[in-house]
Image (cartoon, rainbow, N blue to C red; front, top):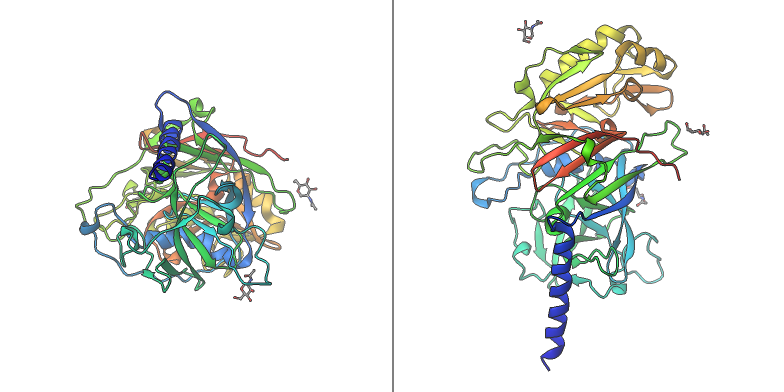
Length: 446
Ligand SMILES: *[C@@H]1O[C@H](CO)[C@@H](O)[C@H](O)[C@H]1NC(C)=O
Ligand SMILES: *[C@@H]1O[C@H](CO)[C@@H](O)[C@H](O)[C@H]1NC(C)=O
Ligand SMILES: *[C@@H]1O[C@H](CO)[C@@H](O)[C@H](O)[C@H]1NC(C)=O
């Protein structure tokens, strides 16, 4: 009688150990690659993707629950009409159902869009149907994660009438996401399956995409699946959006990593109270910005967290543009105005955030005037932003420099967004607590 559960248990254990071995064995160069697209999200999910990381960053999660007080959310003023997000497709459940997920290194909990069972109304074909998966289970209310105000999530959870752990969540743009916390496996192949991971299963949401939370928190996909490292190469965006170039996402070893240069993650003592710090973000030491070869007169201090945690510089795949704190932004803007100010579209601000904009007819001239930009980090590591990647067409006939003021988002951090990670390998090496950058040719048009 007991043989059935114990067999199941054994099988689970074997699968689990097998998986741990696959993803974490020191000498086995585990490596699995997935196509990655840079995609305009549907209108409704748009501002969400832009805010995803910054929203979660306000929650001040910490692995040491008692050390950190909860900080009230900051207000968000900015709304973009759309946002570019990095999308990968993961096989979820048993048998696997392919789910599109927004890759977000700035947030923790992963979500899938679950099929809401309303008779006669067909679900969007992209959503996940739990009833078709044998490995799906809900998280019972008795689970420690289903306590109100648990430290790891911002999610207010409650026990619903079915004794399921229910969450409801307002995004910065006012949209509501709600659903249940569940456990589900990612089934890469017959022999490569994760143990059941805790995910959000969104039942009330019009979005097509889920979210793959990849930050340093212990409930991120990366942590739960014991991923040692992961990396991606963001394809060059095409101006006309008609072709969707495809980049690459790696779980595990990246065969190109020999050429990467690494910057150590900054770590923070948990005893220290830093209300504006997101301790779970990938924070690296930025040291300067060069425009057209000229180093801007910006104190390194503004790229580092101060006593209150303001000023950390994070690498975020879930934010589209780059955002700089006031002092850095002002110096950058001053230089760009000096170089190209005559052509500036005065008084024009895109999405309350981008205020260095030009009529598209001047694009080539502006690119030539501004030149390349270099982001400089510790250890001599640099990200070169080619002049052709300085401007983004934000609406018909208008191009803006893809850099905004952090304050307009209501945040106190510097964020390197995915717009400035094009044609670049970015590796998050969790085992060695560092981030690597390497030149990439990311677009393989299929
Ligand atoms: C998007 O939002 C609008 C208004 O909030 C709503 O009417 C529309 O049905 C939504 N679209 C989708 C695809 O959910
Ligand atoms: C869009 O851009 C691609 C690549 O630059 C080009 O091949 C294609 O012809 C363009 N399509 C249109 C409709 O302009
Ligand atoms: C650099 O900036 C600081 C403070 O903003 C200023 O005091 C200093 O004079 C500047 N140095 C140069 C060379 O412009």
